[in-house]
Image (cartoon, rainbow, N blue to C red; front, side, top):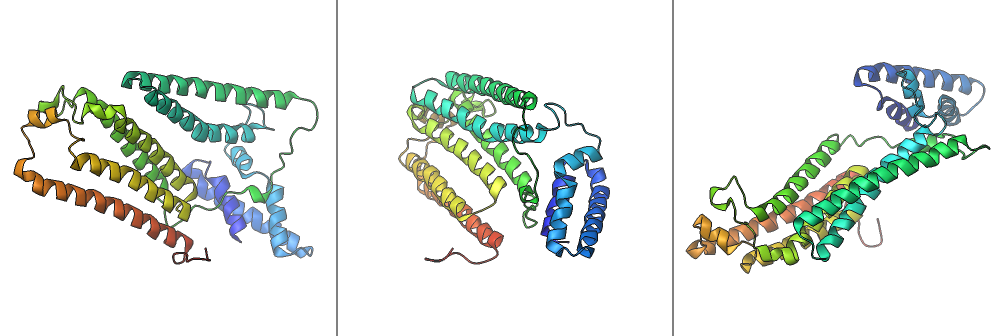
Length: 323
């Protein structure tokens, strides 16, 4: 068996309940092996025979659906899989970008926090409904249109790549990153109304309210970009382009954040006074330590991305004139 068979078995088994995967994998490998051997005995080359056996089995998603008696009839069996794949793509790419663009436009127009959140949620909900409705309607019309329609013949070239065994927890990393970034964005907005878990700051913003004129919306936009970056890592794994993007995002966050902090523009003076924590002489120690920690974390994040890219490609860093 070659990687082509492995890819087919993985594509089919990932959509069935875990309790049934082992049996399906074993059955599929036996069927593919028997069919391939039979074709080889007729004079076919092993690679061609394997490919013909996979074509005969058909789309692995459809095969898995039949294995667990799951009907594909929301639109109709002919176009169901194409409709489902397109809808997932639209919801995972178009929807978040549109919501982020609307929120950013509202911020630039000078809207307050409530208006920004309300507009983003409203547009997101409306767009989700429209994407689902019009996509479904288009496929329903296509399903009922006369003629042969689009060429939807499945081929082994459409098989997904095997998941990278070196990073089996990539999905967990994505979920963790999105949850952390979401909480970070929530706290960034929430602190404007005070921090109820900090007694002295129940009604006092931690960050200087003047930052809402530009810098806090800027950091919220960076958080959205970081979320899209995390999704890109999950989808494609580390590449040199994403290493560069990671470096740019780190610089875009660290440089203005440290500049605001060291010039005294970041923390709300009323918050410092309420906490009874003027910098005083302690600033000579706290400021350098904070700056060093932030820079160190950012540098390690960039280095970690480079290491993962090198390991994922099974080689060393590229040099000029060679990739």
